[in-house]
Picture (tube, helix red, strand yellow):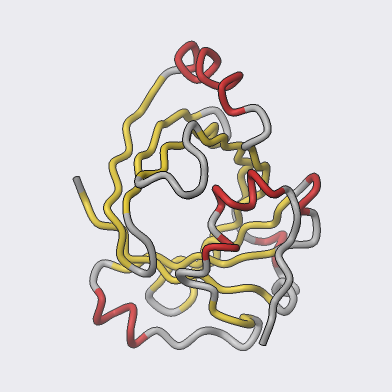
Length: 159
């Protein structure tokens, strides 16, 4: 088991040089439903397959990721019907961190979310978001990928 230390932000607008950054297509489906004590998903990351278990919420979560092959992915994929998302993920280095900018497709088109992972909580606390970031949604249940996959709509933001 390892810990994932991550902050999540909505995006005002994508950087103007977005196409200059590496991108890959992701599709992921959930074997559990929101509200379960653990989250289990499978992901096709541009032809690399894995199954991930996450527990907890907020900035620090338990995470176990296991590589699976295409046959295993294809066997599990039908079980995720009505709990799937597709997005393009861009890797954008800023200062000493890698920002993963997710541009959602399908029913979630128009949603852009940045995730930033850290090696420790101190680094996370010191992170200063770039000016193209908007509201921080770390820990917001509405913006968990599992909820987005089930609800298939962009959540309203109430300030």
